[in-house]
Image 1 (tube, rainbow, N blue to C red):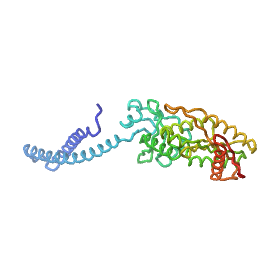
Image 2 (image 1 turned 135 degrees about the vertical axis):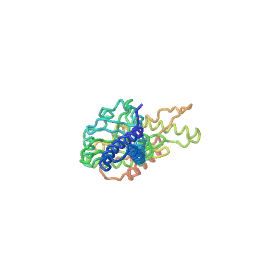
Image 3 (image 1 turned 120 degrees about the vertical axis):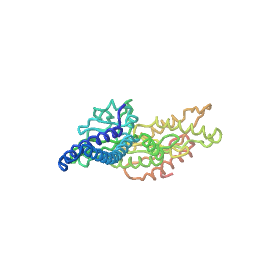
Image 4 (image 1 turned 180 degrees about the vertical axis):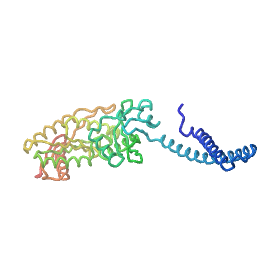
Length: 370
């Protein structure tokens, strides 16, 4: 079992008293001979020696105890801080690990025996490149510290995010003697932040992008179209007679249908296109990078629209029920910044209502003359 530094203080205290008393006695005997010049009787000499020794030993014991208690307090505080909830790692000036705390082992899975004498890079996940670490060490070299988020790897191979702070320890001459790293596992907080972000941009039922994310991607698609001259399209999809399903079979069955519709829509589009749910039974598909020729772009949109019609017309298995549902689809073509995103959505929505008027379960393109 290792001895803590503060457990050695009583021995240090006794050693100090013994050595101090011995030195005092040597000096005292010299001064006694010089001042009294042998005029004292043996009994007087011994009596004076005993009294002076006792007085010095008492005083030395008092001051040594006071010093020892102060040092003991500082060491205990330091030891308690070192064993805090944050992981801690101390290296020498060459980044060779000298000591780690229990929180380090709890977070990383590595024991002190496994890491002492090794470089901390054994924790590296490989997610940060050389330029990341160069910038980090440049900061430590110029300011003496660095802090930020990194991805590291536990002993079991799991990669996790942590908030890391590294501080350089320097001697009185300004030479780096050690590096002290403290870190906190932020897996839980990062997961919570990701969940909040997901709730802000995705529909909780279908996990499709919501209106907010759709509008953001539509703005990007319009800007891209302005650069490359290629067309895009908005398909506004509304499920026919969805309210009847909800009223007769219940909202749980209606939710199952919406989830299956979402999966089918995603299977109909290309990588880079967007399928979003606006709410209720309204979905939007955004197609981008279509032909730069308007007629051809409309033909490409029609192919995907008809594929969606065919796919959504297939029967659904909803719990114990087999159910058929049809969609009404409205389409609007965009190119450059000729139309705003709000105008495009309104045009596709208008086309969708034209589809419903035409008998439902069909695709209609926006026609400003109607």
